[in-house]
Length: 157
Length: 363
Image (cartoon, rainbow over all chains, first blue to last red):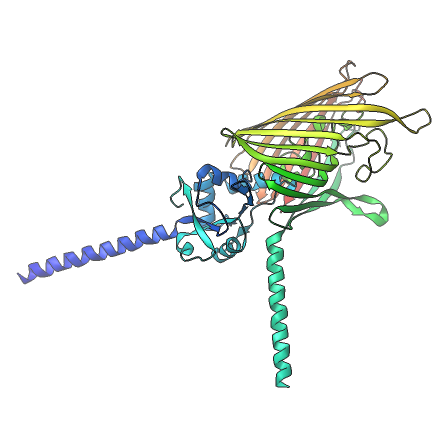
């Protein structure tokens, strides 16, 4: 009887531990997914994936045709930067870089600045009217001068 | 004494804060990029218009500035030092490739004023930016046709004036356009500095429209028209004008494993008295990206400098490879084979091959 009780209790504890570890792992995974943040001045709450691509390729330069869009990226050698090129833009960093070399050197536009730390990109987006960038979801909580931008078709990356 | 120390401390703190804020603002509003190209050319054999000595060329070093004066006003400039510029020795060239202000009214309508590239076809606006294209040089037949058998270019490299430009969408396709009204160039003779003063009342008009149905394909059409002042028998400016008209079409397509570029340019030079000269040129390039690093390419170029003259055509075959060694660092090696007809003004029927190599850096 006691042995059975110990057995059941052990099973229950193991199950709870498993649940706890699994949910914390799952939560961590969600928290580390990339999300897009924009400066509080940005007049939209969501964009399509296609428009997001246009923003990062310099083909869409103003929010609702007026406020200048100031895109920024995390450096491609960071995890989230690497995922951005693979999962969101679906192009290699080198192809992206060549695309912008033509635009910048022809005098058409300035390339999005690349940051190496989350703090730097948050500071940029916070201070820049029309700014947009991406950070891990865990870093996007409780930001005062930024808001999270919903991208239709992308549930984190 | 204590009060003095405190005052100095607060003064230093104030200066430090000011400097930090100014730096942040500078970093926020001013972006600096640049590029350079170092080249080597050697012609095989002594006959031809290439370099039989085999020479290194400190081709250029450029700094590109983008200054956001306000959210809607951008000032862009490209300052270039070419061929080891040394003014004391009269060597090389220092040039403002472009310097203009651009005001965004909306995404679809921006206004620009200053010195700019003529936005025609694929290459003119990036012809100095060697990291931005695969080959060592931009196509000669469509971009440097005055060195390929024509008397004057299809369009000038640079232009000073005003422009309207913008981006929009047409259905699912992206569209961008630019229209430039400028002083034009003075290809026949230089009576004034065309970036300061026009030598006649007529203005040059240029434009280009590009359509991208998807990310891999771009189609474009361009035009340029201008009137050059003609001189009378005493060498003074007359009322006569030589009319330059050029138009072109281009297409760029790329996939993961193969890319294509084709460009066609045609037009005419019509003096007020005398024969009109019509000319046509085209280029076609195919390339094969291997892991975005190693890109072999082949380009064919052809120019007919005067469609009324037989046997004056020039052709160029370019076989090469572009290797991206690191982000922004490119190594290019290629063979250029020129062949020409006997009536071609630049080559007079001579054919030759040249080795060209370059290290191009973009930052």
